[in-house]
Structures are given as structure tokens and as C-alpha cells.
Image (cartoon, rainbow, N blue to C red; front, side, top):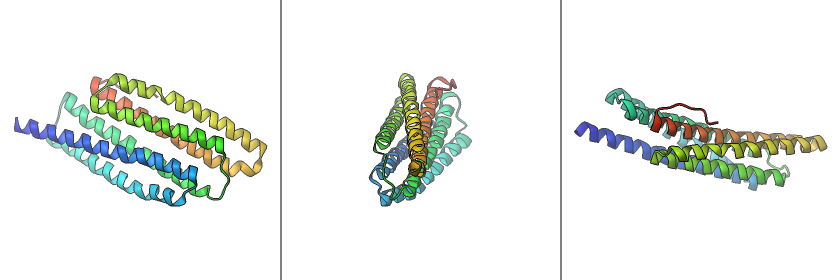
Amino acid sequence: MTVRVSFDKALVALQHDILKTASLVEKAIYDSVQALVKQDMAAAAQVIMGDDMIDNLCLEIEDRCIKLIATQQPMARDLRIAITGIKILVSLERMGDHCVDIARATMCLSGLLPIVKTLEDIQLMANLARQMLKEGLDAYVNSDVERAREMCAKDDEVDYIFAKIFRDLLAVMTADSKAVVQSAYLLYVSRYLERIADQATNVGEAVIYLVTGERGELN
């Protein structure tokens, strides 16, 4: 019984730290896009430097998950809890990397005039991606399969906006060769946000695996 209580406490602690890491990632998504919109190079630099904390947390928690599997040899749902934790951490780490990519693109855009409509669409993509991440983590905490599926469905909205941005920027580049460099970097940013939403979808898939033991592609 003592071993079981200790194991349960370890799982709760892991979940708590995963949520802590996710909150840092959610903030990085917001901060990276705000740095772009405001052309704030200092804020972009902060996003890049802050990624070390996300990476270190992910590695530390992943090591604890692996150690828990090795020492406790959990079975069935207990094993899935540990594996799901690792899956979510991988997605969070990649989201953080894409936030760094956005911040670097922002630095490359320093001094260039913004394309206002595209920035509005990029902010919309970012808001959707952050919402997906939050809902995915809520589904994780509550083992809510239905909520996970609903969250994953929002990836279609993100893809739609990404396709719109692609078409819009292609038209801008065709009409004005001076806007090519700026448009290319904005395309990169929109692609990074699309990938962040894909990683949020992976969190939803991990939740479904946790609850049902079934693997499925919802992206």
C-alpha cells in the first residue's frame, strides 16, 4: 500500500510539472507573436532565452517519467500515464522551439514595414493554437476524451487561416518584389504556428491514448 501511495504521489507531481511547463509554452506563444506585432526585439530575445527553461524542464520531467517506469514497472493505465507524460513533453518542447523560430523571424523583420492584415491573421492563428493547448491540457487533467477530440477539430480552423495567409502573401509578392523578403518571413511565422497547432493536436491524441489505450491520427 505504501508503494502504491508513493507511486500515485509521483504521478501527481509529474502531472503538476507538465502543466507548469505547458504554461511556459503558452506564454512563449503569446510573447513571440506580440514581439512580432509590436516589432519588439527585446521581447523576441526574451522568448529565445526563455526556451532554455522549457527545454530543461522537459528533460528533467522526462527523466523522472523514465525512472518511474524503470523502478516501478507500472502496468496498463499506470504505464500509459507515464508514456503519455513523455508524449506531451515532446510536443511541448517542439512548441517552444517553434516560438524561438518566430522570435528569430521577428528579428529578421526588424525595420521592415508590417503587412497589417497578415499580422491580424497571424494573431488569430496564435490565439487558436493557445486555446487548443489549454483545452488539450484540460482534457489531460480530467481524462476527457470528448474534449480532446473537440480540441483537435480546431486544427482545421488553423489550417484554413494558414492557407489564407499563404494565398494573401503570394499575391503581395507577385504584386511587389520589394515585399518578397518580408512576406517570406511572415510565411515562416504562419507555418510555425500551424506546426504548434499540430503539436497541440498530438497532445489531444495522447490524452485519448491515455484514457482508451487506442492510438489514432486526429491531425
